Length: 345
Image 1 (cartoon, one colour):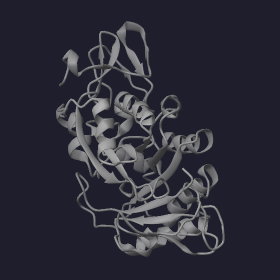
Image 2 (tube, one colour):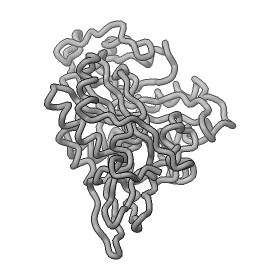
Image 3 (cartoon, one colour):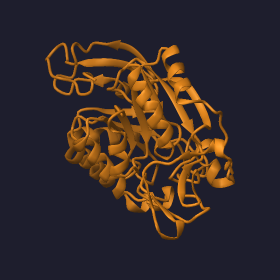
Image 4 (cartoon, rainbow, N blue to C red):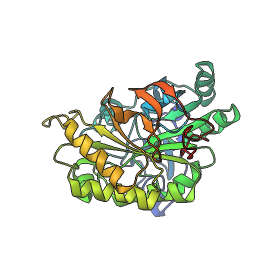
């Protein structure tokens, strides 16, 4: 386990407790950590009554991606986002697609990565022609110190910042980031407490609270993704509840990405999501009143593209992460003039 001083960064958002314990306020686990111990994410350590990040100078992934890969479809479409990650996560999702880096510290205590500074990250983003920096692949909340330093430098260079997140941040963490965080895609993995407890080792309500808070109390652009797992979170009743929640608590303009599941990590005894299930979820979202519903991991599907919810005009034609055509004019549909949410950002 990394513990030498050059690998340590004093953590943000924690309180000192009695007996040299600390209480982390970054995520909704709100870990109380004894001296010498780690939080549930396994990358934040109490050393002599002070909480430190063990991953600040251990970047394990850094490369340009299409912004659509996050997925963010209404935020700077057609641009590239310089995507970075460090190891660690505050969830234990049994189907995690990036488990090699998100779960390594949890399973083996291993924290790998390169000592890349925030200045170097921002410079690489500018040099590669990216318009934003994405904190992604693993949960960005647990490397908030690096996100904060990169994010503020990025804003000075004219870049935006986006999170791809499980939505387990505290309101304190959202407030801490909202001055430099411009967009976020939150995984709303299910609408079931049992699902979150059994498959993610977390709770549903904090994610719902995060979504509502971001949508109603900040200017951060929000999109939501649900990975549709057969026989786990794909019932008609649950999907109706989930879609209704987005409409009533976040707003009809919040895009909902419904993503196809493929067996991963520990969850291998299931089949990929049937396309019929994805289509049914799509129709449930539209019937609930959502203006923008997308299907993911199904390249070539019509529902990858953006349509005007008012007149039906195809506005952005997509195949996978590629934009073939963008007809939006001044953030509006060129045919009926209705405003298309997000495109003024």
